[in-house]
Image (cartoon, rainbow, N blue to C red):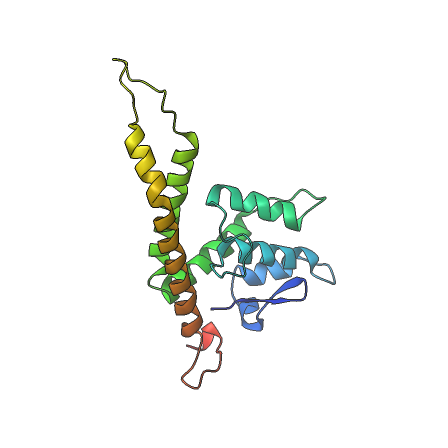
Length: 183
């Protein structure tokens, strides 16, 4: 499913997307001739949502991703996601969820992997309960660390399946790419 095209150093919308709210509104509110702000906001939306391996921000945890994208797209400017951009993100995610049955599962697994990573980074083996017993068992933490490589391999395989499923959904029988709105 493609609603944006990456060309040179710009993310541009496919023509049909500009017919649909909120993408149309984002485009139209930018009164500049080059539509610089709208194009950056479209890039932000693409980087926030796209599961494709070409997305340099796809692997970031959700709580960090937006900030990293803003740092990259608005180097010397202050910008914050507004209600219209948030609505476009929700709409894009909704379309992805409908296009790929495994996408929601992938997101759930990714979230649990991020939570596990955060746990491993912050676990304190010296923490004790009120009776002086350790809160966490060393063996449980070591077990989680040992299994992390297998979990990451499975997450990457699931991501590849999602990308393939989304790519295949945008093809016709003659292997030509079609617009998602033609279905």
